Image (cartoon, rainbow, N blue to C red; front, side, top):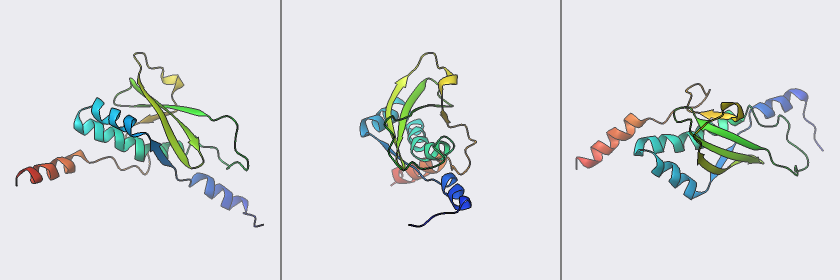
Length: 140
């Protein structure tokens, strides 16, 4: 059995990479619930920004045995605070469970806010480039 030094363990805890799983009906809800560009931005933030933000919330040390209770994390979008979502972490995968409209958002109950523009390592979805490509395609 091999053992890691404490410095290696710390590096592994902060460099975790997560993937996001989301049922296609929830992806469709995000896409259909907004204008076409806002839907693409919302989906991009869910799949690309959420894993980066979750690294600060994730347990620092991987558990040797699976937990009996899952922690349910809650999130919102900075640019549309009434849309809430919840997700759980199972292994290295974040499973988005639900999306809902909240008339009175309670920011004190939120673990993650997407779309603030302050997430280190996140490159926002470029809507200008997408529009340019669509305009080029429609000219033919």
